[in-house]
Length: 251
Image (tube, rainbow, N blue to C red; front, side, top):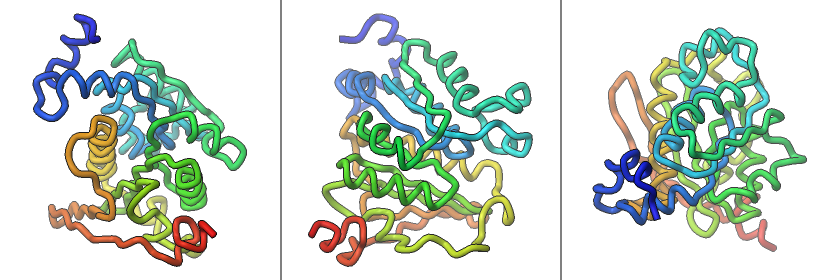
C-alpha cells in the first residue's frame, strides 16, 4: 500500500495507463545496481530515484574532476575531489529521502561483481571502459540478471536491453574489446547532452522492465545521432558462437 505522501509524490505515475499504483508499488520494492556515476549514470540514477526505485546501489571508484562537470550532472564544483558515489548519493537522498541509497566506492571488480549483481533485480551499465563492461555482461548472464547497456562517443550514443533468457548479449554485439588507440571520449570528445539523452533512455528501459510496461529494446540497438537529430534501430541477432551466451558457453 502507498502512503499519502507517496501518493502525492508519485501522482503522475499513479494516473499513467500501464503503470498506475501497482507499477509504483513494484518500483518501490525493486533494487537496481547502477555501475558508473558519470555522464550516463547521472541521469540514470536521478530518474530512477525520482521514479521511486526503492533501493539503488552506486558503484564507481572515481573522484570528481573539473573535466567531468561538462556532462556529469550529479556533481558540482563544490564536489571536486570527492568520491563520485558519495556526491551522487547525497543528491539522490536529497531528492527522495525515503529511498535506500548504497554506495560501492571500489567500483566493479572481479572480486565483488557476483555479490553486487546478485543482490539486485536489474543492472544498468553506465561504464566508460570495455574490460569492466565485459565483466559486467558475463556476470549478469551467469547470474540471470537483466542488463541495460549504454554507450556514448562524440555526437552519438547507443543502448540495448540484455535479458538473460532471450536475445543477444553485449558480446554478441562486440565480440572483442577495442584495440589500443580506439576512439574514446577522452581523445575524441563528447557533446555534453548526449549522455543525458542515452542515460535518460536507459532509465526508461529500467522502469519498463521493473513495471512490465511497454516493449523492451531486446535485440534492438537504438542509435542516436545528435548532429542529424535522428534515431536508428538496428536488429541484433544472438550469436550462436558467442563466448558468453552462445551454445558453446553452455556446454
